[in-house]
Length: 116
Image (cartoon, rainbow, N blue to C red; front, side):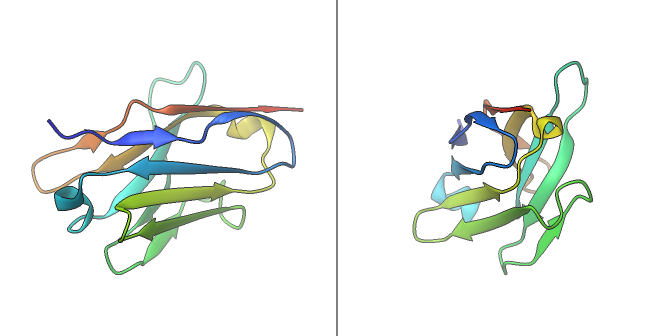
């Protein structure tokens, strides 16, 4: 069973920073694009936050562009999401995700709460 394990969430005040981490099995990590999604309270679907390819090409959703940075550490098989200048509207459960052909894997999520 493939397990993606997120960590690093918490309660912060607006303007502060957090770094999320996601540990991924090596065989999955080395070959696939990694992404972070988030699901806000009361929202049914998860929204893409950012993704990074195996060649470190990145994409950011509009709401987080310029404030969040996605990166990957190939030695540690870990993908990160550095979140700066956090806003109350960033409050959500954040999920690490990868979609090899024909499959989709996501972690259990880590809660980020930003108070005003």
